[in-house]
Length: 251
Ligand code: DC
Image (tube, rainbow, N blue to C red; front, side):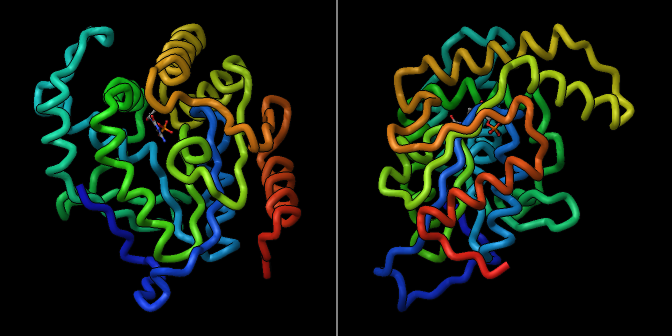
């Protein structure tokens, strides 16, 4: 698999220089995506949405018939690795959505990749060490091109252990389920709170308990609980912490 960002500030002369890396890890629904996007915009850094990589692998694995409806059933790791290695992924910042668009093998992947079902497939494929290994270099390579904000589960622990700033942004499962419920209702969809909560807890459990690169705060991460905080407050705290760690914002 290769990943490139067409918007990257690609300066080959500077390949050997070290650019700043800010890691934002934590469970889904804690607000990482929004904070990471805003930081990347304010700093003019690239944004690594590592969850999108696992989502693409999960979606393609499902389409290839590698994932069964029984989430506990194991997946053929050799086939999964071959599939992962066959993908070419590009991220394109999309100002309208406040997220990166994902281009796979030259074609834009629709919003489908962001739904909860695909999130579950992503969590299932993310358990496999060979998949994680196949995604490691390309994630690290993104930090060789410009400053980087990296959003994920293992950014601060495994992918960028020497990052300048590490933040673990979390929130209670209940608060995250309530946010998800509001999003779905706002979008005119139906939503069942208990079902959402159960799905969130199952995904957390798998991500936190897997053997390779489980979701957890790095030892040197600032842990921030956003359960009772609004987006602006979270962003302001994160920005202030980045400044304290030596990151310069000119806006
Ligand atoms: O952040 P997200 O919801 O898009 O992530 C989807 C899944 O991908 C998540 O449940 C676990 C996996 N993932 C991972 O294992 N490591 C990462 N760095 C990012 C995501």
